[in-house]
Length: 274
Length: 344
Image (cartoon, rainbow over all chains, first blue to last red):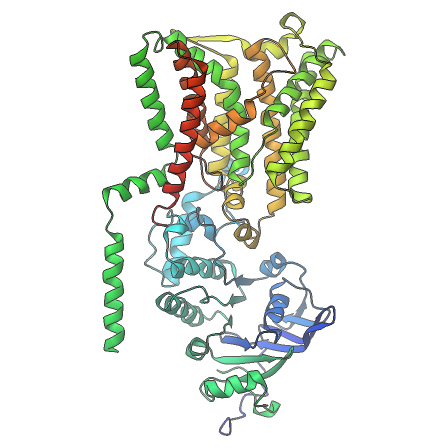
């Protein structure tokens, strides 16, 4: 930690998603104790922390799954608040959950547009409520191509016939289709094998190349070091440090997580990387 | 680097091996893609067998009779399919149907309500009964089996209390209630308007399930309620609408029932709930939800009708019917389990 540079701590770039002093308690348990958080445009920010560090509560607050007791959430510098995940989604924050949240018997295109189906134009759509199946399959395919998931050819294929990695790719593609601001990936590789996890990591890199800011929650340090631009370390309900994987070792990060190493704020990369 | 290449080559070889399908796997995949195909095969086999056993079976008049005998159960089975697609079940459907038919017949005969309003009232009562089931399932979170086992008893007793044990006979029925009993001739086949009404309902719901967002959501809720919820679908609302719509269909089944038996009796349709579930299951719809087609259910109902009619035309004992249908149920569910494993 000695050779860390301090450039970029005073940045003028507005974070895409930011939280200030979030507090959330469950009875006597303090899950968030004034948690700060900042995600900058175009970066992959990993969020790590030990069990009980408040990592998942932080993400739930940012994705609308939990309502914080106090504190502010800002999207593009504007204060926002949401009571349900659907409200966060409506303003462009999409979440991919670790449990493969796709309906197995439905096909890829149907899963991609589930809950947001588009209808055919004209009276067929407005009077007979007919869905635009062909249109949705086409946009699904386009989306798959853009994300570099060209191996999935048939959008009418049932999701249960896909591998775990491909299913997670469908989830990520869904988030990328509708998430206009931020994509949150909650342990996206936890249920996957090595090879499938590699596919998902590649997908995350594709998202970054397209300029989409990504929050990655993960326990897997090598994966975090592989794809993250910055790492937010959560400890005891607060942000313990933000570090850049190029400057620190896995051992240092684990030390920060467990409290063995305390990083003074001036040594933290609170600003954007690029 | 060489290690990684070797490993990935190994993976590719393994995947290629997995992609190679045996003929049996190919059959499994086809049946998986077309859930109505296996019941259709069973129906054809049953038709062939009974035609060869008895000359009278394949007569147009007898085939017309089968469709008439099937119309009531097929209509109930349509509503039952919607519910089973959401991984639910409705044991009260027959009771709701009879309750609706008694409301139609008695309000018209006893209270002198004109035919059409009485008819609409009966169907609305069916919808309300479905709404009650739906509320108990979604608000109190009881399993559908338990809810409808309870309401089966409740609706049955309400019907008996309301009817005071009395049948409304043919000459006491208003004309509107007898509309669906009118014969319609197609060449040598004679069906009824009730059969046409049943087919129209199937056409409507085949469309709705296949081509509308609501239909997609019905499948999604039955397939994986958590995934549906995460996708932003309001699961409780979908379930509530399914039970209510099914109740309306059961009410219409009550109308078809009056046309079929030419009376409204509180004691009819005792086994109708189990028969409707039989039709759905034989028709290839999964009891675990999310899989199945109404076309399969229609074929399933026809299989039950054909086996029933074929055995009696052949002069065989009623006991054989139960044996045959019972065996079919076991075979159908076993086949469903096997087909569900296709390439999963």
